[in-house]
Length: 253
Image (cartoon, rainbow, N blue to C red; front, side, top):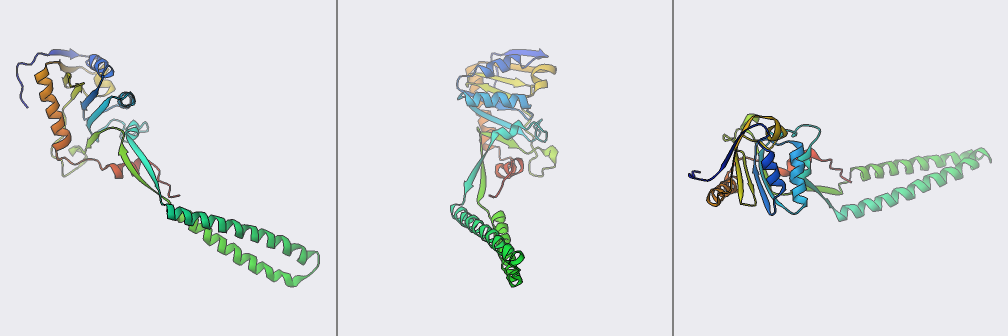
């Protein structure tokens, strides 16, 4: 993309993201971000804006700072949906009822046999414990069936639209292009570009460069470029369903 003669502000130095973060927090309609690196605290900022009703679009890579860490705020961008197999649940409920009946029968029969054998000295009733054992084995089989029955399955959806492109640095043979751009658009009226990643260090600590423009023509061109990356890049992405299954527990019942 080429666009010349745009009116813009230039900043070089530390805390290059202070004004950017202020504009993002003051967004009224939408925020679009392209940044290959993210920090947990700044993912929280996007979630906060989303909860306020601001439309968020995010393009990043699996070089996310907390991707493999303990503070996985990226998890919060992936929503787990649990679906119930009603027929399987009905079958499981029937088996649970049956196991309860069998447990009652085992206890009642044992309570009946013990005094017959030890108080009345009727040793022939000891054979009744064979039936107790059979009932126990049947109930144990039913309990294993209950434990292994698939009641739930899971799907995953995005909290807001985002793309996580697989980095060529991770040995991916499909993506030869790494989206290394840092682009921020607020309300389709203000745009930032430069070296500034959406990370804590990038916003505050690093010596960065950034350009801010409110030039309508320049911003429109930048929005077009962001949309092109989002919808037409044809780059390999993290599979949301597989990724979600790695992030969340999936109990079967």
